Image 1 (cartoon, rainbow, N blue to C red):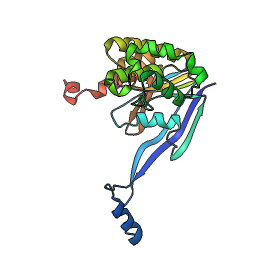
Image 2: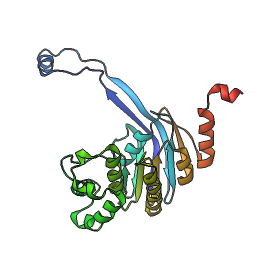
Image 3: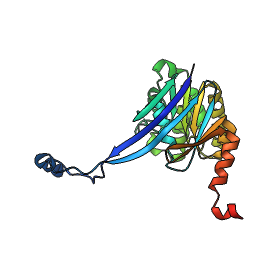
Length: 252
């Protein structure tokens, strides 16, 4: 059974405000042991707590930098919490950085295999999916060309087609609903619905509030790394849209 539990999870990044250092500067620094610059702490997540049970579809919304994508990466295990407890039960499938893993000099067919291997497929399992991925991408003969010749839209089509050819348990999705042109976006939304029906539970991020309200049961409203509010999708989306209006509009 798939399940997520976050209990008072915080994540702090420790960074040094250093400029780029040449090899000579690095050697001199090691030789003379100059005092290091102070460490900056960035609180990416602060005391986040919520649970997601089997069958739930949860959306994360908030302004840019609110901590939404960072939260997904904590759930995926990319980042380990600085404090608090993270529990994720079930096989994780992540749909973010979907263009990661492409080889520019290889053609589309080869890249379908390469990217699928990164998602946990094997030569045996991908054999039954490769033709369906190709057909969904609608790239036709372009699949015989090196992907370095692809337009940005073509690359997104191929990446989305590969990334969604999975059998998920815990599905983590970050801003993939805007893939390709308008006609392809319609297909992409239907594909996501089918994928979500197969997943045991889903946590997704998108600025497309209409899609979030339609696809999710509950919404987590993030604000500066904290959970500002959690509730039914329609209620939270309406409150978020109201809060996003300029103050002059609210006063009118």
